[in-house]
Structure formats: C-alpha cells, structure tokens
Image (tube, rainbow, N blue to C red):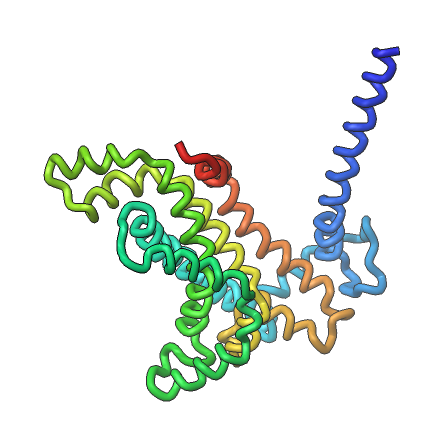
Length: 285
C-alpha cells in the first residue's frame, strides 16, 4: 500500500512538473513558429508551419522601414548605462546606510521605502512636464533624448536596489574594513578594495535585473521618445506593428526572438552569481 501511494505521488509530482514546463515553453515555441511562418499573418498561425522560412529575420536587416539594429543599439545603450549607473549609485548609497551612522539615516531609509510604494507610472505626467521644462535649459537631458530617459530610469531604480544592497552589505563583517583601516586605508579605499569584490554577487543581481527592466520597459519610453531613430526596441516594434499587426506578425516575432537571445546571453554567464546574490542577504550573520 505504501509503495503504491509512493509511486502515485511520484507520478503526480512529475506530471505537474512537466505540465508547468509545457505551460512555460508553449509561448516560446509559438513565437519561434511565427518567426518562420511564411504567411506572416496572425490569423493563419500554425504550431508547425508549412515551408518554414527565415525571410522575416532577413527583413529585420534589409527593410529600411524597420531600423531593427538602430532600435536594438538604442535599447542596449539605454539599458546598459542605466544598469551600470544603478549599480554604482546604489552601491555607494547602500554602503553609507550600512556602515555609517548619521543624522537622517533612518529617515532616509524610510523615505526610500516610501517612494517605492508608489509606481513610477503614477508620475508619468509629472515626469513628462519635468523633462519638458528641462529641455529649455538642458536640451541634452530633455524630451526625446536617451540621457533624459536614463535619468528617469535611474530615479525609479534607486530605492529598492539601495535597500537590496544594504541587506547584503550588512552580512559582510566589519572587521575586514577595520583591518584595512588599521593598515592605513581610507573608508573609500576599503569600500573599493574590500567590500566591492566581496559584494560581486549582489552587484551582478542588480545589474541584470535593472538591465532587463529597462530593456523591456515600454510605457515611459513611448511617452518620452519621439522619432523612429530614437525609439528603443519595444517602442519601435509597437509602432511598426500598430496599423498592420496581423500582417507583420512574423517580423514582430522574429524581432522578439532576437531580442530575447541577448537577455539569455547575459543571464547565463551570471546565473550562479545571481542565485548567491539573491540568497546572500537573506540572513544577517
């Protein structure tokens, strides 16, 4: 009886696992199928298309109406600078909150937490008007500029990631820095030479999370950017398919596959550091 129930439980668990895998992989398989479907139509989409073709991928690089490479480069630039800037600014801020005691420290931490309670989307109108005003004095950081969009992304990323890094920094023994300072190191030098190497997992986590977040962000980018050459990938593809979605489905799917491959290439080399970074700050030693 016990053995029969054991086998039954094993079958149920494996069945649920494979069901979850199929549920997760079906959209990917469907998009891959659409990218090689010669009909280029959503209405005639088939899981296994007849006469598969790579024409949609060729269109991305040859059609002048689809500046795919320009959109992709814009996205990489905006996402990369945002991710690196977030890591640098949040690491400095988190180290200060973790190691130093100063007036307003608790208020600052609570303020960061309070700001994160309100989604950045709620401030869309305010952000637009703010960049519109900035355009009159600093055009490089105003509307329809990548620096302006990057600054907006950085503002939205500071709160959560600073708290995130602080929790990890709290697990690093203070004795390591104290030993370095006894040998003559300044607090900043101890931070750069001691803390940063030990905190690489959490830095990798923040880097990849922020890169992916900025990479796929659509709403703010569509509001703040104007002009085909300035679009990021998500905005460009949305406007490309806006009036002919059912007739450009294959090209849209091909672009989605190529865009996802880049994220995969970034995620795979860093996955071990991501796992250790996500769990490292869970318990303070």
